[in-house]
Image 1: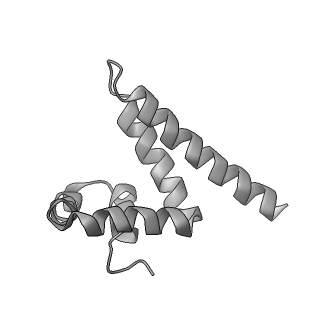
Image 2 (image 1 turned 45 degrees about the vertical axis):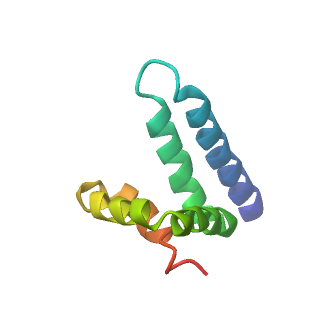
Length: 91
């Protein structure tokens, strides 16, 4: 039963992330919260996702540093996403 829960949570995370990307260009603020929710689920469940985000952050160190600095004022859940995907922390 645990494997079914993990697989469904991962699928839900990908769904939220993709839905947020699709909705982002539309009027209204719903794209970013959906992407953040999907990212939070995937950071907890998917090592591949953490490595992918850390790789992107590693390619853009200036933007990654600004993200680290800005995240100090964010809610705890979003700071978790930034810390767990820092290029020096992901293996």
